Length: 471
Image 1 (spheres, rainbow, N blue to C red):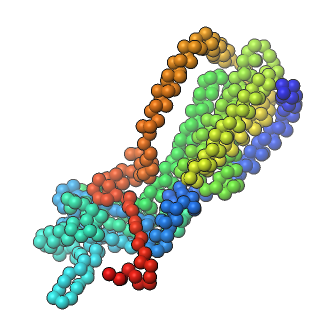
Image 2: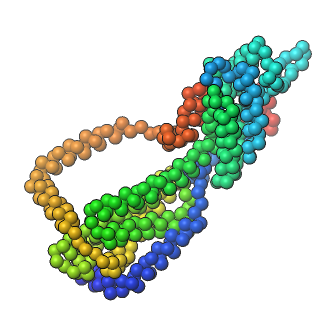
Image 3: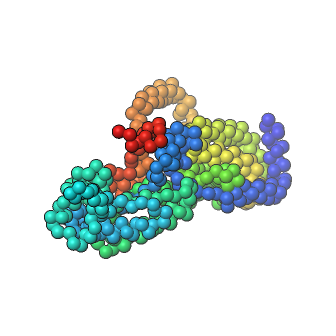
């Protein structure tokens, strides 16, 4: 095995420019699949097509109407939500909501279809026809009706009558990100305009459409901040440990190419849609890929510090680390592939992308990395030797006290394992977001005052045509 690895590494060093070009070309070919990546912000994507709950949900949707909603919630600083002024604002928002793309229905206190008995006739009309003409007595009548009707109480008006809402129901094709974006943009424009015109009233916007939009926004934010931030942090830590610019550049190249190649291959060429959970794959791959590079780099620098030439040090490092790096990469990939047993497709995609990144990182670590190190000027600083000696001393301490450490660590493992029953399973979508997200703040506040965005729907079949009219 060692002889084979030595011969292989000598070949890499001899053909370093060819290996460099082929490795970069192959990685760029994989990464080029990134142009085909599509993003899905549909919460339905968390369930497989065979999931009975999703099937029931889609059957309800086909039988009745779309469950996609935008919920405008407003509450004045003082007074009730049924005054002439507030109802005038509600009526204005109701009319504006009809202009939102893909809206099929808008419900509010002003257009609620209230039924009155007039002599022998039943009159059905908007609960509030003209808010500007409401007297105090009529406003009080509206409040009493709204808080007593099951269709409006806690849905369109709070128990204390200080908060009201405008419900907009939309029909958006699944995975139509552009449609969701357009609808959300229009809804936010309405809210922003109302906040500017009425600073003494709190306006919030939530609903399932905002949930989908927030998934996309959170994912894009992570990709634009968390991933680059992680890359910079890794670069800083690598340089701090190695004190080698060439070594740092080589490691970061492997890390970057591994993430780009995996995402391009899995999400692009294989046509897997990018979802909020799977956007975490690049960060995971960065962590996995840097471990392969560091093993090879540190061993090489230590050998150079001992007096070996750069090429000799590369050969020795590959000989020592070939098996550990291979086993680490393979077992890591297998671990991530186990996510395919998850019932949620986004977590399968996360596992597959991370597994691909682990394999690509290993392949680049035994091809591109030694080739780059053979080309770039590398100097071994004393910091690496000091770290190596420190770890040697640490190893000696562990060996001398292995019995005590075995007992202490076993007790610690048992103690922390005993805390597993305290796990709480929570799959409420709103709580996927922290308090920095506008959607989370709006949804929590709406739930505190009204019914929130969660609902349970039942469908009852009579078994015969027109059977629902049968007493």
